[in-house]
Image 1 (cartoon, rainbow, N blue to C red):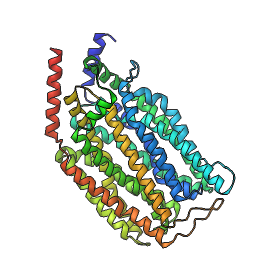
Image 2 (cartoon, rainbow, N blue to C red; image 1 turned 30 degrees about the vertical axis):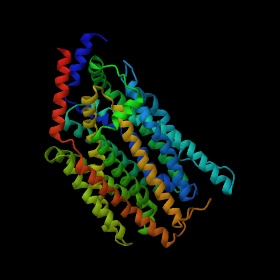
Image 3 (tube, one colour; image 1 turned 45 degrees about the horizontal axis):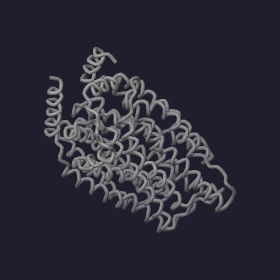
Image 4 (cartoon, helix red, strand yellow; image 1 turned 90 degrees about the horizontal axis):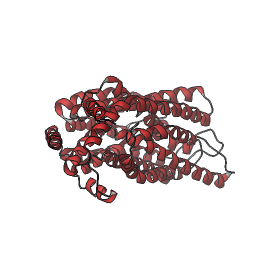
Length: 481
């Protein structure tokens, strides 16, 4: 690349983001969000109520896949930091080549093959879903982790990052809502329970692949502009991966962010995985009513994203997070005491929870770029991949742990899975109903409170971030002179 080209692209990197770039960036989270949303809300139910796998075994399948994948996340992040491509930059090649396998393995999770009968079929299904789940989550990391690491490469503006994340999570939550509406339509139109999930997975898989390609081609110019600026100023790293990991975990604000995110996401995952059981078993509604309740949560979260983003510019990220989480805590407490017939109140509580869910999406992810710049100030290196790798790792550990706890507690409480070949849902004992109530109320409530405590002590303010950027700018100007 010529010096004149580098100078031109560097100047482009400092401009404000245009709408088309913001939309393309947001679209990159559409596919992972749709597939993750369908998996979180329905995969555990699919295993127990369609494939006929016991709840404890089903929870173990999900935990194994997530933990295996989570261990690899920081290393994928490290590799994306080291990727070199003049045509696509560091992150986009991973999205470009990983999109199609990502869609295929997601679809294969919703097939129910036969491995004989009785216990042999159950164990055959167990190992099939473990293998497919591992592959599916590996390709989820391949496309999603480099995508999340793009945020600080698109803009360095403190408030513009929050706005950019609003676009990202608008697509994310919008995609989640779309997938739930689609599920509602398919569940009502397709009578066979197994075929419902096959059709849903096929449509969501195609949309996911297409949205990733939109992101790749729509953000390419901006990404390459940042790359030109970075390449001209970067210093060769003498750090080994062990030394980089040590530096990451001595970054105190980062430890706060991963704690906030872990507790927030754990609450999201536990609530999402138990809601289908709560709506059907505790509230006495039909399976086709489940997506409607979820839309109440996700729809509110989508509408509040831009409200919270605007408020954060006025009052700061901490106050926004506290406001949303307080409403969610009240909703979680109310759900525990909710009784059959109180359908209207259930939807009110779902809307209240949506206020908090939107801040769980928005605030931790808008904090992480600030942490990365503090690390750059301290070390002289930009290492987005390894920081985002640990963020995604913790997201998956939270998901794995939440699903495992839910599955194990359901089985321990006497929850009855669907018998092989049976279309009717069994009547659940009172102990299982109580376990469902614990999982929808007290469990996420405790996690949310712990997240609030960490948020209160989070050290990076708007003023501190401005000082970090000033020092980075002064360092850059000193190098150029």
